[in-house]
Length: 222
Image (cartoon, rainbow, N blue to C red):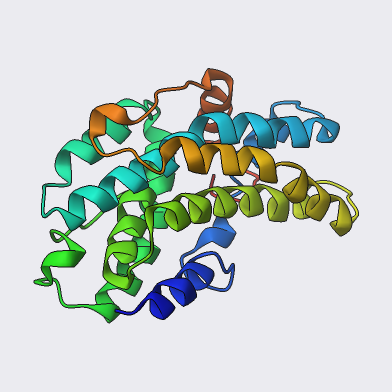
């Protein structure tokens, strides 16, 4: 693949029109609002998510990409991600998103392609998207930025369905967290081993998502 392919692939992976099922996810925002978090706290929630769950996913994706390009096994990377994502509800939501990326990868390459890694059914989102990045020559820096962008836009898009907001507000939120996104990109871009993946925690968000999983009235799956 050429560098031009990698640049275009980065844009495609960050496009909400890519059919991965991301429209079914709120980035944990719906559970937070159902638990009583006021809508005025959404920008703070967005920042907290970037510093915790998003950071773990971005780091995991970068490490998975490096392991894939070196021909190593993905299992230790996925195990490290799971250890840093203790909620089975959150892990399952990530696997659901991963299926969409796996479907795309299946159309791009045959499973014996060594650069796409081992056959992975049920891989979480950061592992699945790393496999596509390896196939399409997306750089580690761009991959980390795509993960952050996807999380930010998931929360912002969900906010418009869950709260009475001006759509311009969510654009402003996305721009306001751009410096933090770049900090995370720099933080994870050079990571190489599963042990390098940070391990921040967001226990309140996990508790909210557990309650959300059994809610009878909800717009999003997670």
